Length: 490
Image (cartoon, rainbow, N blue to C red; front, side, top):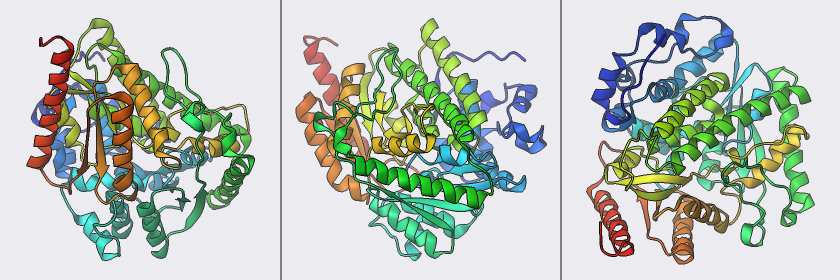
């Protein structure tokens, strides 16, 4: 079945619906999740976007999307995840909620073969996608209100019991982690859900962070490093002991062996996903102009956390996306002008509309620090896989100093010649209240670049006027700096 992508463009919801009609039915039937469960009629996921809007994702009507088949396929798969989780239970698979660690424990769960990991944390964007406060209101009635970040939506989902099946186990990371989400996890346990607590230690970063960098260089594959003696033997042994306890507990709960070969096979799958994401980002960020929008790039990067509950189909989708962006780059078929203003985006925006709006104003995101550094580097497969996963947690964005994150941002600024930085704080987020100012001060002084920082306001159908004004003013500052650097010429 041959399908030719149209000329690359960012399209609105109505255009997306119209383009979907051009996709042959035979091709739609070819894309299925849980391929190893047989050719099940319920396993298709490429539906018209109106389907997801009618199910509650009203925000889709306000976003802009890449018009490639790969992107349409990706969105169908991501928006289908709730159904996929309930189908998993229906066909006898165990569902495990991995919470708080953002990307480290899912490879351990995958090794069991009969289990799927998923992140309730990621439900934080549902109030925005649904333009609804239902989940936040439920969390407030349970004791967590507006003083906490939007991750409290996950508590509302546990209370509602309709966004995912009851997990066989909840792995709750705590310690050097998000205080708000730790409170969510405690209330989840109080509801009667089975919880295994995983303690995350505070990382003491190396002086200058020279041994911690994992931002890729051209042609190189990053791998997390073990040569930072400041970690200390006791810290490594502590976190490894935590993961060994989790390993044993998972085997009991899932009633499945998690041998070395099983875990090594899981790590190889995870490394393949991370490699594909790295290649997609490199193509997108280093091309002379945009070959994939920022919104799709964020969704792709967050797929490193739990692969949207089907690692094999997600891998196939990433292959499709990589082929698409590679072909666009080779043919110089771009989504926007080459003179778009290049920025690094720091902290994921809870409201995806912000990314679409930023691109409408002439910004191009060429780098990111989305709090999930621990889910990006390659994992060593030949070593002890449990220890490898445990030590990968020491690369986490939020368990050490703010300077660690700032240095990762600075390295991307230099690599992709960014002209500015956007920091989208999380309203109520305990770490954002102080860290945003620290990041802004350090990056402004270190790089002499304009930095725009703001807290993402509560869910709604539109971006607040004041925030629009600030983004537009930031764009004008970047344009004026470019004009000055070019001798006053456009």
